Image (cartoon, rainbow, N blue to C red; front, side, top):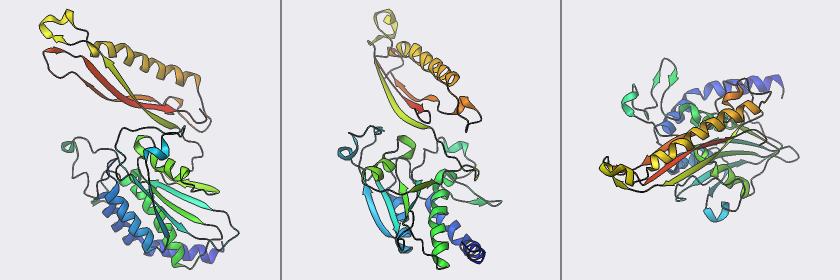
Length: 295
């Protein structure tokens, strides 16, 4: 690309700064915890259409995915699990590119621990705050506005450029998997996750697991007659922790500085019992099993 075109793109990006910021605020102010992404996806869909892209709504269904070896069931109903794909058609003869990002975010947790509304999108000292601002609605904006800047200066790609806003990245990746199964392909893909602008060419994965333990209920005063599902879970949890350490002692990768953080095993949810004076008969634990690059 000639230097004068580079300069023109830089000017176009600068000119779009306020519009980009306002659009990012609108995305952050639209909560999209995994499983409830539809409202924010409608905003993304409208943006892609405003850019003049050919836009598809790609719906994830169990029938489409459950036979695929990469399918990880996050336990969330498949209602309205819609990913958006916008295609900027190339003039022909060039290589194609996917710019991929996810619209879902993790829960905001205890709101009292936030200094402001977690969905505020407020700008303080040059930084935009809110759940999902960094991971990764800013990345979705960067992808969309990069296309807008290029179109502003009259650039035409030789190959197709596909913008993808996918669902369910935080819980197993059925959004991106749906686009793959549905036939969306390109010669290369850039995922605009926050990396401090470093380029990463390797990535760990994750599977979601659920462990259900059955004990035997008894009144707490007759504890010896019951079997505590919590007690049964404790050695399982200790074994998972030990497995996590042992896996990382055996594995290394040249692109990861700290091998202990590449693909951890983590238990994130534990639910057990139904009454303080009852030996708990059931416990359900859910977690994340990290998958090493190439594993």
